[in-house]
Length: 176
Image (cartoon, rainbow, N blue to C red):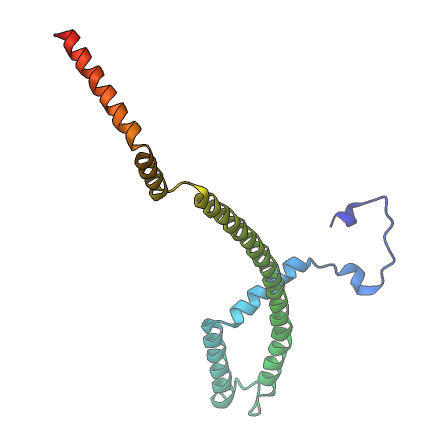
């Protein structure tokens, strides 16, 4: 639509009816989808059935109102015309739906790729945490080291205890 507004660009030569018949593809597509949606309803089927029954009944039983005798050629023409317009409209609606499905599939692929990248990142981070936790000293390791130190330096521990006891006794004697 923006190209039609430009005055600095000359119009190309157009011929015939096509130059006067400019349709908005989106508007035509929305119209086609609306018609296709309506043709697929039970309401349409019920209305069409009632019209066909009324048509046949009037042409068979109402002699004065008979406008389409028994082979019902006019009714057949109406059905043919309906089919001739309905089929392209349905195809147009299907093409628009296919375009929407394609865009949705592309978005789904992008979302899946993003999710996969996030999952791989989290897996790497989790592996790094497992390695880091594996390098940490565990409770059993620390307990074992403390037991080893106390077993190795048991004499030093007893000496320290005796010195601490003497200090306590000395401070207790000073207080009394």
